[in-house]
Image (cartoon, rainbow over all chains, first blue to last red; front, side, top):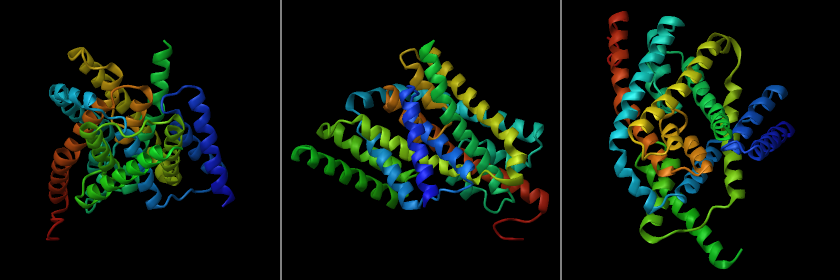
Length: 163
Length: 183
């Protein structure tokens, strides 16, 4: 119980600190780092119940939804061609990632395939069943992908803004 | 808090919760995130704005999201971690760079699109987290949402089934055992 309180407290402090430093979504990035680091230091694990995860996602959805306006939605019709670029880009990115994992790091073929596709963890977990793929490897690769993008990206944007 | 504001807040929570419930029932991917967005956005587009968003609520939600994400790091232990740390870090940086490159190309081809919105929309991070970053930076969340949806739905509906099929064929060739029938 004390460990949980320390982890959550650390997360909140780190979140507020990065917000103060004007890192985009600094509260999220700081809380993520604070949670991860304090779990390591305390050698403890914060188990988040599924219901709480769902509540957090509903809260996120509500907050993002409140920012959507009719004017903003009108811009969507300009996104057909950009959408095609996204699809082509995703395919190329996945292919290159697969090549790196398979040829360079000698991953198993199926492990490399499912580690390279930029999907959510739950979609990947469902689709690797029965394929002799180590779920720990694939989910950790994706966890790193998500975390590095979500941590480095806001810092990168902040640096870009300062320049 | 005035009665009117309190009423609107309750309405927002009800609409968002209903959106999550309906999306979950129809098995929409990322139901608990997309459902509230669709319902709240639809209300705002057709019936008018609900409530403003306070900085305090923004920070609280982001901290909650960060805690949930950070809790996943407890899985990083043992020999598996040692094996995958180098490729994982490399792939993370590669995906980040790739997303920035795609977004940059998009901005060059479509100058009317905001640069930051493009790279947030194309970088393969968590869909909801990219939206939170976009929202925090004041860029068009609608553009980021649609581009992220295009990416995620293409991967779920097209790419993963194709890869799954290819992986099963590969297994069949290697082991001679069909995963469906066991023969």
